[in-house]
Image (cartoon, rainbow, N blue to C red; front, side):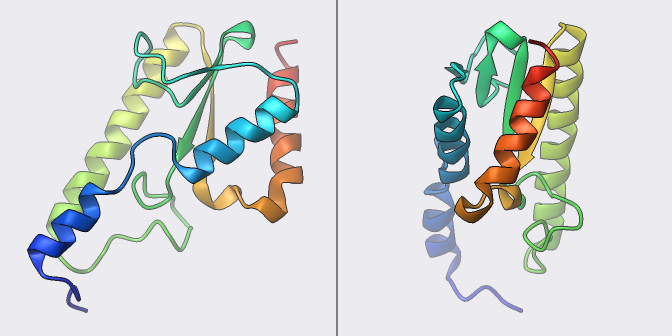
Length: 140
């Protein structure tokens, strides 16, 4: 299937894709705050500038978009057929960088929780709250 947009238009659209403060990230932050957890955002002194940092719990939470970080088994984590070589290279590099950052964080003593975009839906925040609480209670 060919792209329905001209290359210039596609470039404009892709330039609007945000890297931080995404809707899934904001939903996780709102949920954490409601649960009573306090956190910092995008700490540049940590590898990969994690989305959410809970210093008290020595924990970082990474909110991954299923497409950009290639969530295997998820319908959103599919490599596009158009310009496939570019996307395969781009997404592979993202996954490798993610792996290096998680490894570095863990070697520094941080616990890392990855939450996928598809796990965050307003109707399913209860199970997500349970996951967060269980992960964070280990360090309490």
